[in-house]
Image (cartoon, rainbow, N blue to C red; front, side, top):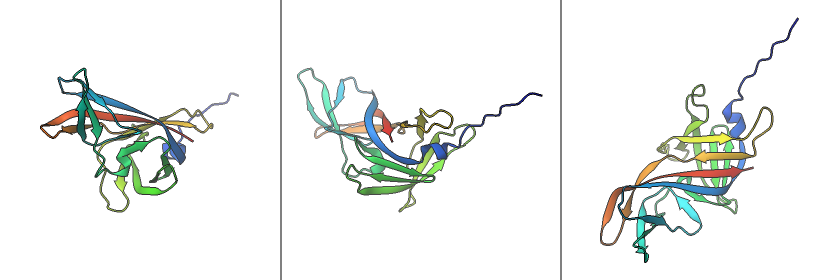
Length: 178
């Protein structure tokens, strides 16, 4: 007699649950500009339009995210907390203050088990884009690192003299730890 081994992937909702803290932020930018651009945010990154800060000596355009009307799910700062509980995501700042709550809707759990989209729990507004996560967990070992890819969105660059439409395609990769 032999024995048969059957392995089945864990439901991603079980692996993502818990409190995660942003440990690093990596912006991924593509520009349609002929001028070189450089993002000069102080200690944050955001998925939002940009504004021109200045030009440096190399004729490089220095830009910064405009965060005046930004949704909390598109503002990223080291130490911010993302708390997943099955179909709920609670975003908190680095002192534990709740910024916003979202419903988490997982896409096709067979073909794309690590993809989801968000819906604002208070307004019912669907947040644009597809979010994707990957983890380092193996078998019954719980993952301690999660890489979260923020949806890719085109943004404008606004200046006092001139604006550039759909000038920057930006995505952000967040590294979160337990």
